[in-house]
Length: 420
Image (cartoon, rainbow, N blue to C red; front, side, top):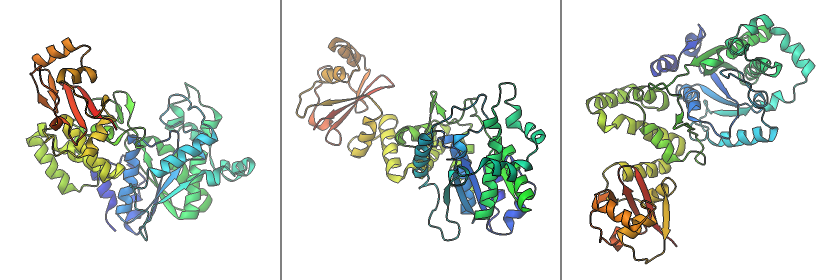
């Protein structure tokens, strides 16, 4: 077996692990799980760290289980939260599970013979539990004194912690026991805020089954600038393309701080040590080229959204931010741009001057304002500066037969498209 523990350490996934985990991994293929409560209809980029952690286990010859918290999501995990989560309806939880499950297709190998990934739902065994039986069989193994010392509980004592959330630890521990029995699972992974829940499951397996369980947690981190990872301009970056477009997803990674890019290449791509070393050597020589960021964005966008969506996002980005041949752009790039920048539809054969086009696009409030902007060199047609106020829009200006890109200044873009 490959030394997956060393690989995970190098990539930055290991903040804490049980003492015998490395030896346990070295003696054969293991089953590893990570749980995700479906509190939203989509995974977000913060979830990519544990998902990629599971993927590296699979690459190294171990079997991953993604556990959807259809049962625990009805309760709410207090870990890392200052206040109690709002309880979601059973219907919303089921819908969130369905949508999140669909997002896993590209992240794991579901066809491998011996390491085939599994997606399970803990509602299948938690919802049918009988309270008295659960308290007798599981609850008796938990000391309230020990539970009170867990970080996730201590952090909430001043703000208040309901019995519902206090009991979450028992449910997650039972998940681990169930998977140990049914799937021979011996390793649970997660973020560092899950350490208390993971060790509770390890203790339960030992007490009930006399079995061996292990745990590993990855660090929770902020960006080098001090911002919360996974946010851009205050908005969450989702994996669902209907909530965050592949273009916006790609731009999130392109805009990675130079101080973070090497760390992200290790955590969020499958590139090897030599490839990352070469990338970073080139990046340090010419950081302005942002080659490392571009490679990072391409790798993770392909992994999450597929090659076609990534290529369209790259092409659309090149139109706005890089030098490009306007007549070599794929039509799909303009389809992407039409969803990202202000877009106005014009009738086929409609004669337009550049002044008309600037006003129609909303880049100027009047023709006189448009003329001044053109005369001052502030208007670009297909990224070419135009200072001729008498310029007409010619047939050759319509790229891919129906799209025309206008820009005012450095950042104000608009797209004109010929309608059906």
